[in-house]
Image (cartoon, rainbow, N blue to C red; front, side, top):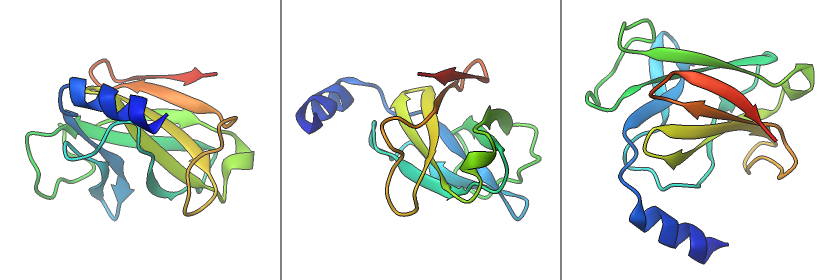
Length: 128
């Protein structure tokens, strides 16, 4: 469905957030306003059953400390079977992302648990 995804992304407003993880005390971006919609980006290794996703509005593109008050966070629970896999995230709307886990260097399996994250409300919910 590449054609459909391309058409949908052209009609949407730009993604408005920086999304990533805490890496050495800094927000390490996996997504920023330059990303294409519906494209999975690897966020890093899944080292524990609960994955913490950090995000903030994209008004500042410099280095930002993970504990900066502008940085919000949500937790997505994938369970112990996800440990050792890779965490993936993709933008699906200007203020919404999906988070999942999968094998290294690819993308999540279609059957993998996904979490939907509303970045404006700072809420995450499992999707099926």
